[in-house]
Image (cartoon, rainbow over the protein chains, first blue to last red):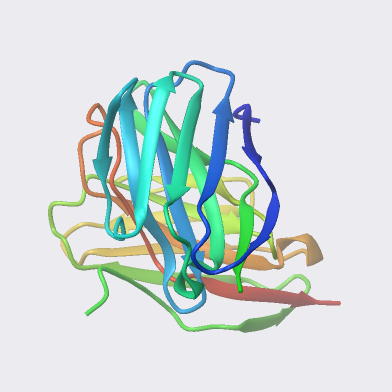
Amino acid sequence: DAGITQSPRHKVTETGTPVTLRCHQTENHRYMYWYRQDPGHGLRLIHYSYGVKDTDKGEVSDGYSVSRSKTEDFLLTLESATSSQTSVYFCAISEVQGLSYEQYFGPGTRLTVT
Amino acid sequence: RKEVEQDPGPFNVPEGATVAFNCTYSNSASQSFFWYRQDCRKEPKLLMSVYSSGNEDGRFTAQLNRASQYISLLIRDSKLSDSATYLCVVNLVPYNQGGKLIFGQGTELSVKP
């Protein structure tokens, strides 16, 4: 258990409304990530963070913004949700174990944009 | 061409069978390699890292061939509880520079009694 929680776990929202998803971790990991998972695409990186206030874009960042004001929280915001953003969103943290790198995922948020 | 390609599924096997999953990756600079398991409607969970020398964890054996850019996962003596989707994953950056993981689409395994 990597101590990652996500909230909300399920959300239905209307097109054009803002939505914020929260990822919370309890183990002081430096790196945090947001992914989306869609049928036919696998998991794709949206944004990631390498420290407080340090973030960068991933493969599918258009329409999303992130913030990290505390080590433990990484927020993903959809400024104006669209139906194409209906997806399952996973947060992840990474750990370095000796010379190896491992990434662990939160339980996911299922978002439906109607 | 997808950066990480896996066998299309689903694989339907009887209990006790041996099943092999294959994966190829396109970026020769890929640094590290993993197999994740994902149960229906759940998060991906790390099954094992894959090392150049090959590694084994109980019934699971992973192999890496950097020259061919090929990764495999062998499951022996399949159990009903092995039913899941198996994701092949590569990391494009060195271990101490965070991670840029590229995921395959996954191969679904269904183990039947």
